Image (spheres, rainbow, N blue to C red):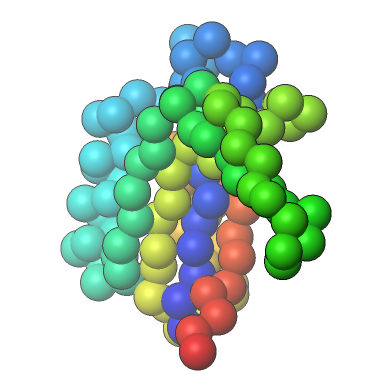
Length: 116
């Protein structure tokens, strides 16, 4: 089964989820290598800063889209990246999420992928 680890950061942190004591690029690269060696890495990617984002919303199917530059204003948290795992169970996904450097000073959300 495939699970997505959503690497969550906090807008209050000047370094977009990386605290002074938190993980850097090297820790994430080592974690990715460990996932690859275990044969459970199915994909993933990092995302640019929330300020680079643009949101599109519509009140209904026929309404004109509303386009807003920058992060969603009411949210302090943001998704900084994803890691896709192909594992046997939720417990295995949880074990990998617990090892993820993104959990240090941030949060890792685990979501099952729905494949249609």
